[in-house]
Structures are given as structure tokens and as C-alpha cells.
Image (tube, helix red, strand yellow):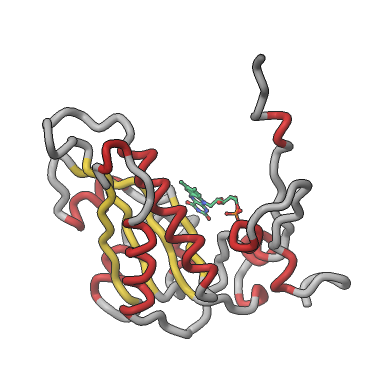
Length: 199
Ligand SMILES: Cc1cc2nc3c(=O)[nH]c(=O)nc-3n(C[C@H](O)[C@H](O)[C@H](O)COP(=O)(O)O)c2cc1C
């Protein structure tokens, strides 16, 4: 227990004013990952979920490069992360780099919505993961040039974010400040601060 009244697995649940679906309430971005490994089948289910996201013109500009913990590929991806993310991501079961294809296939024009659509696909993955009992943590804290070189990206591919994936472990296994982050309830701006009606 991390709090006197709230069990660990509930402390991150969204406290909503309006009812939202259970998966949205339970999704969060953990840092304490257990030894338990994901398998290829579960990971493919995540990518399948991603593939059913909406995208501008059904362009599906997302690409994923991933590696399991214990492989050379994992080490390569991990070395692309910054100092803030390295201390906890080494225990992730899988590291994923999400990449956007910047050019529309059918007309070779710049796809202005590529980042948006990769974000949509990622969100699908994250919710799918929660439904299967594990979690995804997106990260902008990586070295884009290093990742680009590591993955051999071409001029029409750009990294969007990296993602750590795994099953939850005890928050106490983290050092500070990550331990405290792991047991702090999630907060959000009120909808009145970002949604307004016009008539
Ligand atoms: C694009 C993006 C980049 C992020 N980068 C990092 C990061 O580099 N390191 C980190 O610990 N968390 C990162 N996060 C996680 C956010 O801090 C987290 O989503 C936010 O605090 C809300 O918490 P929640 O996801 O648990 O609801 C990132 C999230 C997104 C969507």
C-alpha cells in the first residue's frame, strides 16, 4: 500500500466528474516494470489495435520499431533515451520507437497530419495494453538524431516518441523522484479550461 486509504493499483485511476470508459480511467504511464516479459502475440495485438486508428486519408503514417529486453536491439533503443528515462526503462519488457512517414504515398505531398495520426495509433495501443493487463509509457525524452541513425531512418521518416511497455511492479523498487511519481494521483485540467461552446 502506498497510501493509507488507497491500494497501489487504484491510486492512478482517473477521478472523473463525467463518466468515461473503464480503459481510459485505468490507463496511466508507469515507471516500475516487472521482470515478466510480454510475448510477440500480445505485442502484435497492440500493433493491430494501432492499425485500426483513424488517419487522414487512411494514410496510416505510423511505423514501429521494437525490441524485447535482453536483446541487442533493446540495448540500442535504450541508449537513445535521455538520462531522465534510462533509470527506469531498462526494466521495461519492450521498447518501441514510433515513427511517422512524413510524405503521403499517393501524391508525395507532405502529410501535415502525420504526427496527429501516429498519436492516435499510439493511444489505441495504450488502451489495448490496459485491457490486457500491461501498460505503455510514451517518452519524448530521447535523442532524435541518435535514434534516426540507430534505426537507419530515411529523409521521409521522423521519430515521434519512444514507448516503454511492460507489466507493473512495486513502486518501491524505483529511486526518487520516480518512486514518488509512481504513487502520486493523476490530475487534469478541468474541461472548462479547454472546451468552449459557441452559438
Ligand atoms: C508525447 C509524450 C512524451 C512524453 N515524454 C515523457 C518522457 O520523456 N518521460 C516520462 O517519464 N514521461 C513522459 N511522458 C508521460 C507524461 O509525463 C504523462 O503522460 C503525463 O504526465 C500524464 O500522466 P499519465 O499518462 O499517467 O496520465 C510523455 C507523454 C507523451 C504523450
